[in-house]
Every structure is written in C-alpha cells, then in structure tokens.
Length: 566
Image (cartoon, helix red, strand yellow):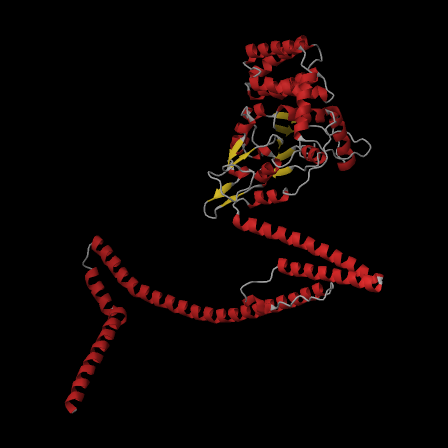
C-alpha cells in the first residue's frame, strides 16, 4: 500500500508541477516577461539602421497587441455572459406576463360566449343553445358564427311555430306579435350570416390571392346592380346639364367653351392634358365631371420619383409571391366591370417625365384595334387570379379616359411632343364667373351611348369641304416656311374633335381654330427663337388672309403670345 501511495504522490506532484509550470510560463509570457522583452528591444535597437528600427518597432507593437487582444476578448465574453443572464431573467418575467394576458383573453372569450348564448336564447323557443366556454379552445372544432347563427335560426323557427299554435288555441294576440318578433330576429340573423360570409371571403382572398385588391373589386361587383341609364340625352344637353350640376351641387363654375372642349377632347383621344396656372380648376373639372356621371374619378398623385411602368401598374414580388397593386391598376381593372365612363386623373403629371412612367400605356392606346389594348402584368395565369385577368394580361377598357393635369413652372418637366401628339391639351388660365341655376341631379349614361353620340355627331356634322381646303393651304404654308405639318394623328383627331365640338354647341371654325393652335402651332415653342420671331408676323397675316380677319382668333392670339414671349 505504501508503494502505491508513493506512486500516486509522485505522479500527482508531477502533474501539479507541470500545470504550475504552464501557468508560470503563461504569466511570464504575457505579464512578467515584458521587462526582459523591453531590455532585449533596447539592447538591439541602438545598433539598427533606420529600416531595422522600423521593423523592430513593428515587431514589438505586434507583441503588445497579442495580450491586449486576448484581454479584450475575455472582457467581451464576460459582458455577453452577464447580458445573457440578465436577458434570461427578463424573459422569465415576460413569459409570466404573456401567460397572464392569455388568461385574460380566455376569460374575455368566455364572457363573450356567455352573453351571446343569453342573447340568442332570449329570442324565444324552448330549445336552448348550449353555452360554449373557453374550454372549447382545446376541442378539434371551434365554434363559428355560422354554427351559432344556424342554431339561433332553428330556435327562432321553433319559437315561431309554438307561438302561432298557442295564439290559435288561446286567442291571445300578444303571442302572435311575439311570432312577428321572432321573424324579425331571424331576418337579422340571416343578415348577420351574409355579412359574416362576406368578411370570411375577404379574409380568404387577402390570404390566398396574389391580387387581393383586384379580387376584392370582383367581390364588390358580384351582386352589383347597374342604374337605369338615360339613352335619350344629346351632347348639347349633356354639356348644359353638367354645367348646371357643377354649379348647383359642387359650387364649381365653368364656361360652356371649356366643357365643349373637354367633351370633344374625350371623342378625339383617351388622354387629355389640362394645363394652366394653379387654382383654375384643372383637377376639379374631371372630378366634378365624374361625379356628374355618378362614377367618381380615381386621383393618382404623380411623384417626382416615377421612372417606369411599375410606379403606376405595380409589380410582382417574387419573395412574397404577391403583386404589389396600385390604385391606378385597381381603377383600370374596375373600369372594365362598369358600363359607364370612368376616369383616372394623373395629378401634376409632369412632376416626372411622362414618357418614362406612362410610355407603355401611350403605346398601347395607339393600337388600332381595341383587342390590342393589353397590359402584361404576370407571365402566367393562376387559378385564384381575378376573373378580369386573362393569361396574366389586363385589357384597358374602352370606357376609360386618362386625364392629366400639368403646371408649367421650375419644379416640373416639359411635356414632350410625343405625349402632346397623342393627347388633347386644354388650357385653363381663367376662372369662370359665378352664376345661379336650378338644382340639377346626376345623369347615368353608358360609355357605349357616349361613343354612339360621338359617332352620330361625325355623321350629322361633317366638316365643310371649303374649310378643309383652307386647312390644307395652311398645312402647305407651314411645311414650306417652318417644316411643320399636320401629321396623320392630328388629322384624325381633328375629324373626331370638330363634329363633337359642333354638336356640343360650338362652330366648325372654332373647333379647327382650337386644334390648330394647341396641336400644330404649339410646336413653335421648341423651335429657334430668332427664326420664329422673324417669321411670326408673316404667318399671322397669312392666317387672316386665308380664314378672314378674326377667323382664327385663338391661333392668332397664341402666335402673338409666343412672339411677345421671345
């Protein structure tokens, strides 16, 4: 035994000695050995040249950094352990608070279910609805609104039968009244059932559909009943009644000329641009017009950050597997579900470059066939997609107009000829005087009837050949002197604009004057300054000679304004 103890003592002593030696070596390495390190450094440092001294300093600095780094790591680990300990204590308190709140939620659910059972049972009947408490949370099937409403309807029906039999036997009229009350209660519960079903459908759409906004539009128009449309109204009555409606219902005042241009512009293009100084009613005109049609316009505020089509149409998020829908997209989709004219207002449309964010829609609207007015949203069709999408594509309805408002100041971009050529610009630089009129209600017309009125005007008010010849002479003059021409698009818009303008109460010459001034002569603004100034006087004289003095007052006034501007 003594030999074993000697063996154990010697072995353990050697282990302890080695451990102490290791600890001592580490202390000498990191703490006590720095005196020797410094003496060695100073002994050799004086003998080195410049390069050697720099290398010695770098080496000594690296040696100092090692223990400093070790100490920093140990301190950091210590702080993390302390923080985790504190967080663990805080988490325990948080878990206790969550448990307390869960208990309160269960108590509130318990109390709510009691009240619901009492209210339903109080409606009458011998069959009582069993109370469902908070313990039902552990069951496989949770109580639903449909279950409770169904039970209540059954109890109400039984109560009604019992009340009717008793009334017949005893002749007591009050029991018959109780039967009527039960019928009212059953109707109320049926209404609650429909509302609960609608809410459930909306929730299901929001959770399972990649187009939740568009699917909610489908749900909105599922049981929608269209109003009774007036198919007897004429264009002139249309203009007069809108002016009276805006005055009497909205306290907005417009001249008949502005309304004629607006309606005729709708006949000539799907894009109208309202220009002018601030406060002249550029935004209120399409808004009040849409209220007159009982289909309020969607106002889209254009932001300076708009750069491409995703700003107005949205985009598909590959991460969430949902389409980021915009109000613009929702309005385009909803317009396809209505029969009356719809409008989307691009407010301050030239705060960003129109030809950037609106380029695709401008190109689509130029397609000759309406079947080609298609926007690609997603590459494939999903089963739960809205019914108005076909193969991931959305068709722009013929009943939709885009109205842009524009201010010309330092904060906006210049609208290019590409956009102006496709649009009908309307200037609003003056406010109309207030007037009194009889109250006028909204009208209901279909977009098809409005298009019919436009086509009818083209048949009834064909442009006079003599006036067309004068227009062609002016076209040749502009080509010869200014290299300007009436393009095919402008000619088409003129043939659509002028007849409708006349049908709304205007004149042929007035309609042509407006088109020439806003669609042709406007191009002078982008031409050479000195050239325009020298030739402007001759152009004014030619217009007055061809169309008669005062024949095209709007065009002459526009040229004089450009001449004075330069």
